[in-house]
Image 1 (cartoon, one colour):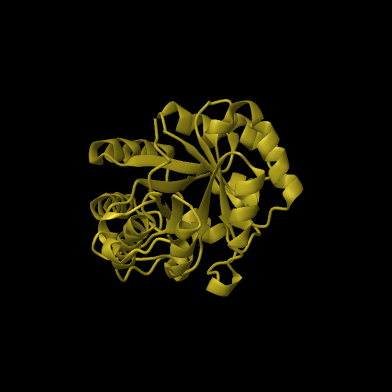
Image 2 (spheres, helix red, strand yellow):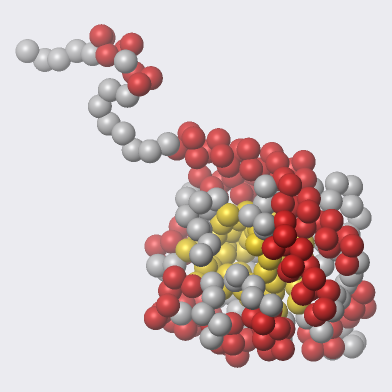
Length: 268
């Protein structure tokens, strides 16, 4: 059982491994070492994901890992004691990921209206994280209704599908709207190349963060939208500090106020 009440940091490795199995393992190892809660990949067959004349066909094909390689990555993650999961882009990928016993699933923003895919994930009865980039309220409502009888398995991530996203284009007020209108867990998929947006989201009550990840000085596909280990360590440190600053609700004379108590005045 995954505890989403604590800070949950997702290392979105995605396709930053460039189709290199050993690089993928190294990124898992570093993600675990610096404190990520989970690593997330993308599981797909390029021909099923996009048409051959798509401008990203060759990129996706180069970065494609086989099911056999993903099975080994899952075993490696288990050994490293870090959660492995992935974004399936077709029904075959859903069945495969469920077969190797992933702990949860991720649905990309591009598939939020792909109800066939979402229903297949829902049938696994495992937590499903869904990004909401480009989604209108009706599209989000349909997904929410789909999980209405098992709402504990739904996590919605506020997301802006811009790669990279400018901080001033983050629309974080959507988080407050989603928290008020959807009784499920709400998180952030942050596509800014920095950490400030995630820190503001934390102050707004978010505990689930997805950040694209790259190795230090790595030249990879999603480099413009990814943070390196140094940046993540800074993010985790600042998030922990925000937790300490927020503290727990307390009234009356608190420990830091004991000295000031002597100056408190009362009316006669």
